[in-house]
Image 1: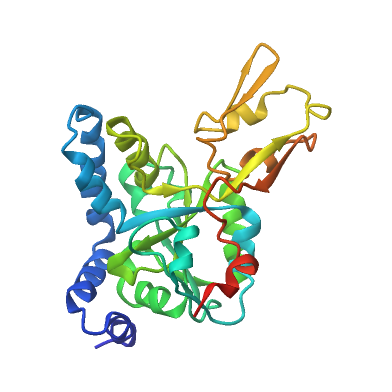
Image 2 (image 1 turned 120 degrees about the horizontal axis):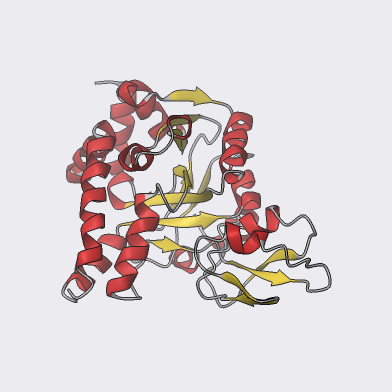
Length: 295
């Protein structure tokens, strides 16, 4: 048995069913997600099917993503010690029933691998190598078992370079959580609405019932300084979630649909937009803020 396989067994303990699911999930990452993508696309024809609502909630409680701002992402890639935040308070950040553990063990051990979503949706070849594993448990498994998906070990600095390269191409940053992979963080992806199965699942499932979502926002909303705004509409173009729009020169902002990704802030040349922690939304995954939650 390879060392990374044994680490996975230890992670799941007596739950061998979860170990097997975890093993299959990463070993057959692409066909697994490609099958899910086919199902997600079928949702556009099932907007009438209300019996899917409880099934969707059950699935999304077990597999979901937390949007990260660039600043909160950089804090993860600056870690030089283990972080384990595992308490009921986590649900203030990740408001799902399961898979809410925030754990980064050996966070300096990082690997990047091909993204199954991008492979499934026909993304540009240069964009496919973009899924990042933080911590020896997942990263070493990728390196030892997933050669066909082109994994490679990278430094924290290289991980930040990848994040910034994709954010410049209008990809948002998400931390994924899945019961079968230990119910904790560990995989951070660069996601675009056109090539992310997760974001597409949230959009299409929302057409069936607004309560269905596997994507939780960063915890931030944006403030707009009208005295600095030049009405260039770059923010409207960047936002793929419909949070910002212009009616003539009147700027409209829908705080409820804003994911707080921060792309509009980073691309406003006039410093007219800023992020703030929104008390009406789940807390940000800000390591400085949440370290006291529990162990």
